[in-house]
Image 1 (cartoon, helix red, strand yellow):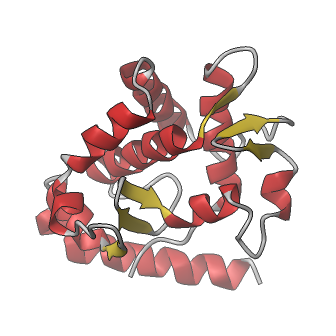
Image 2 (cartoon, helix red, strand yellow):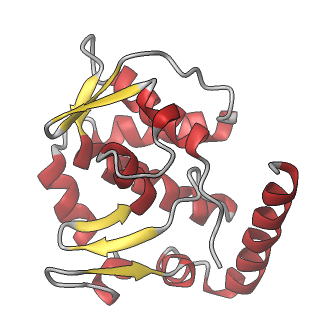
Length: 183
């Protein structure tokens, strides 16, 4: 089981990074996917919950937030909302309209700022190299293909092995709760 993907929160988190990138509010999308994965990973370590709830896939260039990549490439079945705020231009994405940050809690905003500050000078290739060092990617290295990275592999890698059952149960309960109240 994994967490339920939150498109609104993910859009706001990506917008947060794009606001930090300067007056053009644009950045390389692979770089932003890596930054957001690192933020999700650290949030899992610290709180037992990710920011985005996205499914993680090991790809040749490291871990990828799967549904976020689909949104960026405009292959997601419900990318209309995303497209109101963010557009892609080749390998870059740009903030075209402000989505706000009402879905992000104070901890998440602080975590995103911390990640931005730590990696602000790293380009996408630096971050590919960094994420290739993560044990969950090493364990699931797909070569030139792709392979899902389980929540338990990530939790084990960040030192939460003893909490795997509880966190997976919480993820399942959260997904059921969200599904029930979102129709």
